[in-house]
Every structure is written in structure tokens, then in C-alpha cells.
Length: 323
Image (cartoon, rainbow, N blue to C red; front, side):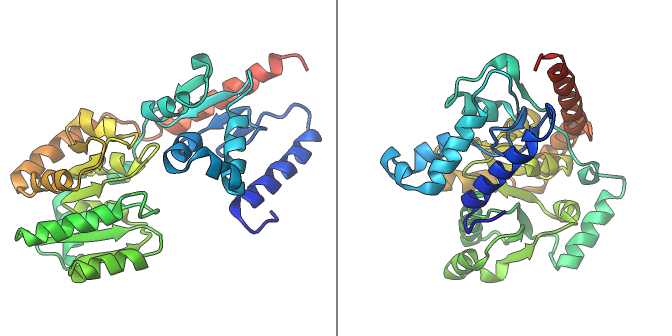
């Protein structure tokens, strides 16, 4: 699509899609992006209107072409009397409902699912030892991990500060960072804190499950997160979690007893204190047991299967509506 900036390419795509759809007889459009052409909108991003309101005043939004476009696109996809909506979590749905008058009858929350490869197997202990040996991490060291792209959104700066604080208290804490993003600012932060040797940036990884088996604590102090699939993966791996209540799946962490959920507003000292509660190996194993028990109840393909059924039902219903 033409356009230098993302919103320009999105506008070009929307126009092109409209042209294509005009030549088709009553298509049924499933969209994972903000599109006025959608019949079934799967919201995978946070509510733009809510996020924007917390970041910039209205007058500044009106001057910003990117903000204007995305706000208009979101407003368009969340209007109309025929469209159906799917959200990733209850909190995700509530966020959109706080900004738009949604019809509850046309909204649904998708069921959660977990990748089976993250669940502990009979070989867990040997897999853990092998992974830690490969990483060069001793058993006495507290290995923390941050996973996911969009480092600032995921709160990586908060995790680096926490590692520094833990080390000043005599805890041999290490941090693995798995995900794709610009590392420079965070490498500099670690260097200023004097812990650059204890923070490793691994890039995007296809073996994240093995890293989870090796780790002791998952740090996910996100600033916002519509769902947070990594939290479910952490629960499946029996990896104790410290996260924030702004994450959609923080509710599952709370419900399972698989970690600590920090209330808003974020407090750095409370974050460090929460990690400190998980420095004891016996405490971590107790939390891990609860996490694994909860994850065992989660089916592997519940979300995909539910989506397929909803799309088919929506399509069949649309055929019954007169042109």
C-alpha cells in the first residue's frame, strides 16, 4: 500500500479494500484491524480512544493526522447495527465499552487457550537443567525473564530497575529479555545501573518455552496489555509471575494463584517487594504447582475453534438478511 506513514498505508488499504468488496456480492468480512468494512471485528489492540485520552489533550489530537485517522477508523468499526465484536478479555471489553455504546448482544469475549508446548512434561527437571546449563546460569542464581516485543509497553525499563534493586540487596538476579525491539535505550539503562553484565537481550525466540522452563520468575509489569498471552504461557510452564492489573489475563494469574498482580498505579517499590517474595525456592514451587494445576484446565485450541464457529454463524446469519 502507498504511503510513508502507517496511518497513510492503512487509509490506502481501506480504500483499496472498499473497491474490491464493491465488486463482490455480499461478502462477509472478518477483520483484525480497524475497518469500517468489517462484519465481525476481532479487537486485538487496546481501545485507541481510551489510550489517547490518557496521553494527549483533545486539541493536540485534532492537530495530529495519525491520531485523527486511527480515532476515526475505530469509531467507524464500533458503529453500525449489524457488526459483531470479539474481545480478548473481560477487561478488554470493558475498556471499549467505556468509550463506545456497545450492544452486549453483539459482543463476546473469546475463551483463553494455551500452547501445549509450554506445559511441563515428565522431563521438566532435566529440561530445566539443560536450559540453564546452556545459558550458563547457576542453580543459586535468580533467573528472571521478560518476554514480548514492544519493550516499553511491556515495562522492560521497570524490570531492569527491579533487577538493579535486587542486586543491591545481595540477590544474584539475572534478566533474560526475549523479544524484538530496539535494545539501545534499555542497554544504556542497564549500563547506567551497573548491571549490563546481568541483562541479556536474546531477540525473538522460537524456543521461548525452554527459556520459561529455565527461568525462576516471569516479570511482566506492562503499562497496558489487551490480553497478555505470555501470562498464560508462564502459568502453563509453572513459572511464577509478577505482573500489573492492566493486563487482560492478569485475572487468570490472580485466579490461579500463579503469581502476584500489582494494582494501579504502578509502584516500583511494590514491584521489587513482590519479586522478593519469590526469591525463596520453596515458595516458587508452591506457586508453580498452583499455576500448573490451573493451566491443565485450559484447552489448546479453544480460541481458534470458538472464532471459527462465530464466523460461520455470522456468515450464515448474513445470508438470511435481505439485500
